[in-house]
Structures are given as structure tokens and as C-alpha cells.
Image (tube, rainbow, N blue to C red; front, side):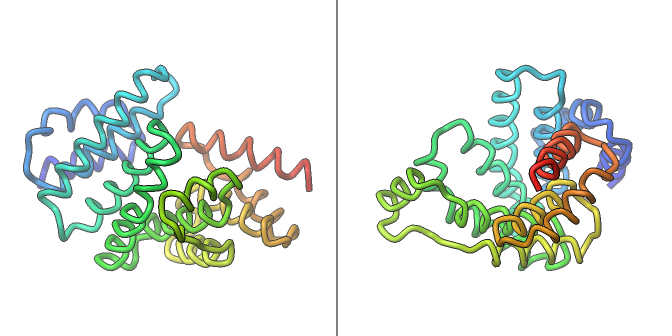
Length: 227
């Protein structure tokens, strides 16, 4: 799999624009290993600072189409399930709270399937944690919508979210600034300011690779000012 190796080498160099342009030529492929990497590359390209809001939206929906195809050819590939769930969530940011809530059980199922297929993947654990945190943290109006959509809506707790964030960190320490930031936030919601502060400080020391890392560092600094 020379193509996959080249794509991974570009990804490891954090050359997200080049890896997207390289993998784009394989969008007609039926190889799930190429397709899920194309999803990742397209999403990463969408999140680069030189991309406009409209371009970002277009790329996010483009990535979702690749995710559907990846899953079609990779039902037993954990990364295909993981990236389908991620793009289901990210397209949900553009289509409204009601539709995102409707899609949330499917989102969780794909993350759980990814964990079942690869229990050692830290990102899948983090994503389940995000799902749990989102439902524990629903605003009152979102709960009303969720009740309309589901009758009895899905629920979770900050404790459950924390367990998944901790498991992700245990599997791959310092793999993702967002996981460390969410650890701090979960501890804060649970009233443990000392542990929250500890994790926010770790975020501030994180090596910046993506724009997301810069954003998390700024958010962590803002949280520390209020503690």
C-alpha cells in the first residue's frame, strides 16, 4: 500500500493541504483505507485558516460524501465508522439542532462500533466522551427539542464523559489537545477545580500543530483566568 504510506507520510508532516490534494485523485477508489484517509484530509483542509466559511462548509459536506463511500466499502474497518460518525456530527453543525439530535444515536453507534473493532483507538474513546458530554451539557431549549424528537431523549453524565476522556488519555497520552481541554472542562462541571486547573495548564503546554490546538490553548488560558 504505497499510496497509503505516502498519504501517512504527508499527514505526519502536518502538510494537510498537500495530503488532501494528493488523496483527491483517489476519490473514485473502493479501498476503505484510502477513502477514510480522504475523509480525514478533507476535514483537515476544511479547518485550515486560509479556508473561508463557505469553502469550509463545502469541504465538510464533501468529506461526509467520502465518509459514506468509505463505510460502504469498509463495514469492518474501525476508521470508516469513526470518520462517518465525525462527519455526521460536523455536518450537523450546519443543519440545525433538531436534525443533529435526530442523528445523535447513529453517531454514537458508529463510535461504539469503532471501539468494538479497535478497542485501543484513543480518538474513538474521545468521541464517545464528547457524545456523553454533549448530552450531559444540553441547554434547556435543546432538552425541549430532544424531548420532542425522542420522547425520552438519550442521556449521559459528566462522570461518563470523564471516564471516556481519561481512557483516551491512558491509551495515548497527549494525543489531542481537545481531549485534554475536555478533561479540564469535565472536572470543572463536576466541581473539581484543582483537577480542572491541572488539565487546562497541560493544554497551555501543548505543541501547536493545527489551528484547533491554538484555539484550545486560548480557551484553556481563559478558563485559568476564571479559576
